[in-house]
Amino acid sequence: MNTFNINRRNFLHGATAALALSTFGAQGMDLINPAKTWRVGLIGTGWYGKSDLFRLIQVAPVEVIALCDVDKNQLNEAGKLVSQRQKSGKTPKLYGDYQKMLAENEMDIVLIGSPDHWHALQMIDAVKAGAHVYVQKPISVDVLEGEAMVAAARKYKKVVQVGTQRKSTPHLIDAKKNIVDAGLLGKISHVEMCCYYHMRANGNPPVEAVPDFLDYEKWTGPAPLRPYDGSPHVRWWRTFMEYGNGITGDMCVHMFDTVRWMLKLGWPKKISSTGGIYVQKEGKSNISDTQSAIFEYDGLNCVWQHRTWGTPNNPDYPWSFTLYGEKGTLWASTMAYDFIPQGKGEKIHKDVVYEKEKYPEDLKEDKIELNAAPATRLHMLDFLNAIEKSSRPVADIEEGHISTASCILANLSMKTGRSIVYDPIKREIVGDREANALLARAYRAPYKHPDYKHV
Image 1 (cartoon, rainbow, N blue to C red):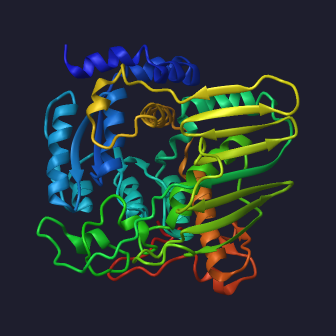
Image 2 (tube, rainbow, N blue to C red; image 1 turned 45 degrees about the vertical axis):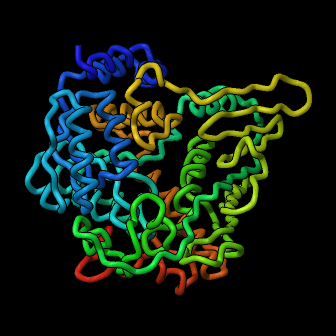
Image 3 (spheres, rainbow, N blue to C red; image 1 turned 60 degrees about the vertical axis):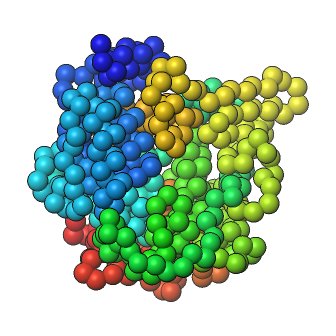
């Protein structure tokens, strides 16, 4: 019996399968034992691109037919790893140009694990090519990119799942159902969200020649072309606003998206933010090291705080959200949750679900987030369920857009020094011409910024 079949047998007894069956009902068994093989492609074969792909391979019969990356070394290594992980044992076709990959292959699913500044163009091109898409968060680097992505998903009638897998995290699903929805918190009138990880790369590496194996021009794409000062992979590109939206865009989007899901919240009525580089001024990084943001709703503020220095306010919950209700408080993170009742009552604690024994290959995977693996597996099943039923997935592109755009708008508030009121119907910031001009970033020629009216 090969590894693939062993994994599928184990899957039937795992926490992910149990949640899949309870969430999708009879459809859950069809997802676990589908009749078809999905043809899959991956754009961006770095750390999380491969991680997402390997989780999909673990829960569904797929044939990975193509991989794309502008780094030949990274691409070739990914090809070898995929051949070892997928049932057929075949090495996918390897591409340096994602548009060529889309043009030459008919794919059911395209996964996008490239840096943030490439997400919009690649997602839109993939749905135009006929594929359903799983795109990493944050979905975009500006608000109007996100509007175009939603428009494209709807126009071409494709399912687009966003990699905000907290909505598929077993212990957080439990917290929503058995704490929030069950009314244990009572009326919730305040939310705090935070990240205190020291994750802001901030060095001063020298400018150097671009290595032969990397197409740095294509890696940069529509973003400004910075002088090459070493490998941009993993952490280095995230430290520049040219390619993303800082810690707020990277980490707040997860927590805010989870809070909106738990509390059934849509667009904030008003967004304000302050912050900047207060402490770590010695390096090249231009993302904030300290930032606060308020996402306002009727009778409820969702407050974000990050610091990439110092200590967390609660060492057990350094990246987390806290729901304050009249009957109690819920602390929650990717690792656990704690319900603390007001006055007398029973405290409730639940830890993250691991599936190490079910998927021993996880333990050998480089840089894997073991705590996130079960959530990503369930997120992939939700994605496939939505494709099969022509329905919206739990992390539909529109929800991903609201969460992403809200974080981007917080950055715009910090930049302009003013509160932001965004009108999602008119797709404009109310009464602020200067801020409106920032809803779309300038693209580097010859790249064209997508237009939601003409996708």
